[in-house]
Image 1 (cartoon, rainbow over the protein chains, first blue to last red):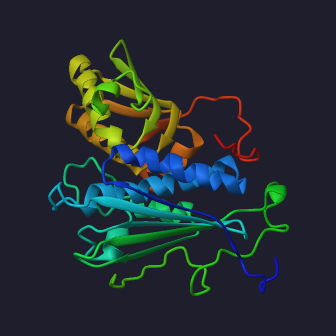
Image 2 (cartoon, rainbow over the protein chains, first blue to last red):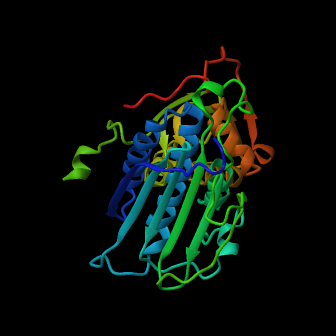
Length: 185
Length: 131
């Protein structure tokens, strides 16, 4: 695909649900059904499934922990499929926010003291997706943007031949460990 | 209402079967292990461990269909418990996806993992079907 060719949106889905742990499975199933429209490999699908699960689990576990249950404890997901065989999944909550994003993304860092949580959520997202961007500020919720570009189905055996353009990011860079801290309006 | 449907036999709860033989407790896990079901699974597994007080706990992973970092936390917690009880802890036969997550976290170097040979499945080349 020439670089000048503009990628177009093929499909888009908005999902929102209460920040309840039952919905982790629901969100995995929903987003995977959407991603499968790109005719991707079982392995790619498993990557997306796991990354989504991590992001949604974070929102369920952390975002609304200090808020009363009567509030709008909602997780919002916007999934977009593009013509260059890429997917963008934006997982957003209106929760407590992350005070130190770099620290939160560190492998093995966890706020949990019972020894039952691994602190590997962001590391898994970064490993399984092309880019992971996090926007958050205390009291302003958290937005996690996951992107991945999939190989052409015909070039599965030779991924380098005829594969699509490099994963696209907003600023044109390709860096899986991008950390951004911005206030959410 | 929903809780009444999601009983232990439900597809939404990972399967667990326990077998005890000569000091070794083999726990076979199946299905999906995520944050939602980790707490209940932990209770059920720990109940078995406290009941049998084995010399070694073997956790058979080959039937796990999905696992995320909640599974890592679950293994870490059981590993700590087994250390406290002075019993061995072995992960048996992790599927490739689970193995990858174990390696990512460095847990494959911390825990003992045992692999039993299986005929390779044709994976990766086939394309996902929309269900």
